[in-house]
Length: 237
Image: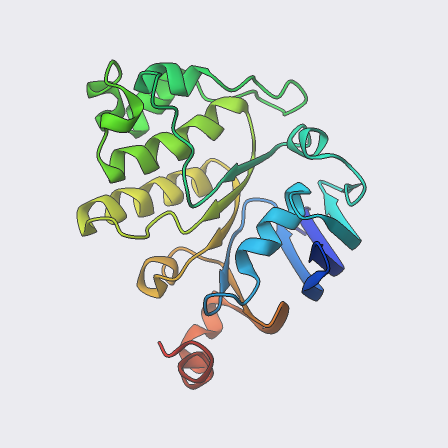
């Protein structure tokens, strides 16, 4: 039986007085790719942020590798082996591509440590070619690769990826898909928020559909064909 990497139970979250998550429940096995589907405002990104403790208030249970994290500050959640790639990427303009890669500290408690620069460049040859270029001089696709590669350097093995394919050229989206497949083969656990269903569908082992801050549908990849009508109703796909 697969070990559970992430277990969320009855998660509620608030931004100020706005109650944004209403009892979210989901489970992610070690080495699994899970996709959160839903329309804009459904609570998908807020779920990722709540896992990290980036919402104002949280209530419920978030167990990471078996450890309860609901009351931990963000930096201690990160040290449980969690890496977050937000939609805005957060590339530092005054640093080169390689300096951006080397900036985050390693997470010492993560088994195996982070990927080396050689491993990163093997996975992302574009970044090796542009390693001396300022971070914001990279193309949108290269910046997205850099944002993901940077968290791999830390040693995180539970990756939270927010809309990494958004607005990118098809060739870059294909490269990101290959990256996720490679990471999965190496045993990484990945939770993705994705609007691009065609990108997410062949990669994920399990899907959770969210509406109004709740999970309204959950199914495994092998059930995808049977859920077409449901997804069309909920998402218009």
